[in-house]
Image (cartoon, rainbow, N blue to C red):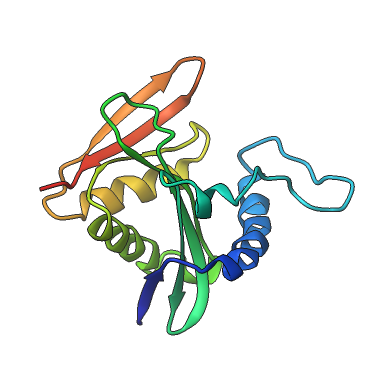
Length: 163
């Protein structure tokens, strides 16, 4: 299985916009989101991930077939963090096959920083995923911080891969 992570071009933005609907549909199980009057889920301005220097978008493929995306930014929950995985989507057909973990590891290798991934309290599968993905990275040194404040309720997984 060949997994390739790449930065999409500006013309590839539509790919993430389309997959965002699948992601938000999956996520609606954990968040009280409804479709808008056009039958779509709403998401903020994705253009930030191409035009803001603190944001980045990534697509990934499995054997040259589109399989998901990652959005990263600096909207962190922990004061010591620098970068956050804002959104992470793996198509269902590629889940539980090690694809997500490999993508996370490729991303971390590409962008050394003090990272975090905040997960909703109710999203148990995502919590398990981030524990396993971070534990399998390098020496497996990561922290899990339980937050319950006005900004975030749920665990935040963090690691520092700058060295």
